[in-house]
Length: 287
Image 1 (cartoon, helix red, strand yellow):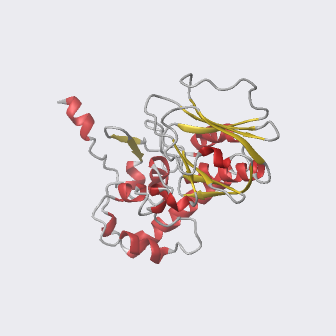
Image 2 (tube, rainbow, N blue to C red; image 1 turned 60 degrees about the vertical axis):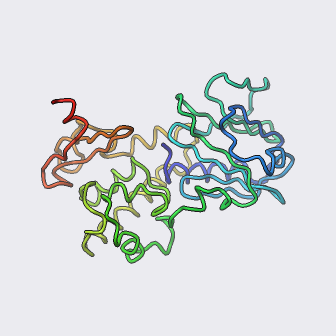
Image 3 (tube, one colour; image 1 turned 90 degrees about the vertical axis):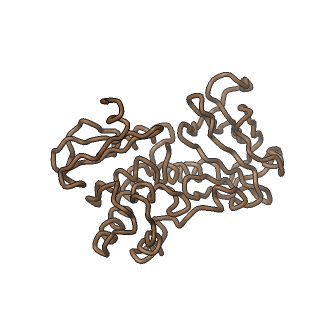
């Protein structure tokens, strides 16, 4: 799933490639992709792009005197820039293509989604905050005012495990499964630790890891073409998706805990005092 660093890199890329250009065609291809109907998608056509913004994991393309095109790429969605776009019109129901945007230059982009669970979402709205998912977002962890005190206030009273709290978009915007693993590894913290139990020292460590991990990922992704961002994300991860490999910090074997629809990775030596975490799904399989 694209998370804050990749979406921020896409924002930079689209700012360079879209701003000042006119959207001449916006074509929904997949029936499920468009989540709004008023204003209609045709209201975007014929309007120059004035800005591209990011709200957590949402991208918002603003048009001159008109609505915003807001998208959430979900788990398997992606943006593919094409210069030029194919001349033949897209065929609904054929392949992963969900929506196509064409510029007056002949270039443009496709929104695509792999797999059978179609969750990629596109909204045409007067204001990005009209999108329910944007309206409920918590603060951006890279904002200037996101300091240790802000993080401590968000976590106070949170009886959830810190891994789940970091992934809650209404608490902190933009962090998903992969970067929460990376942040907790950098903070030397168990993903199962209760969020409300953090000491001031642990909160400071988590804040530093949160900011540094996301900032470094954004810098790695900056200037990279949209089509290469997925590979860049994977290459920069230290523990997420690396079960069985040695920890790059201490050399211990990276372990995994599996859930029904996801998994987390961690280093026992760095994060849990050398003790493996219980993997309930694996335990059931071994019975």
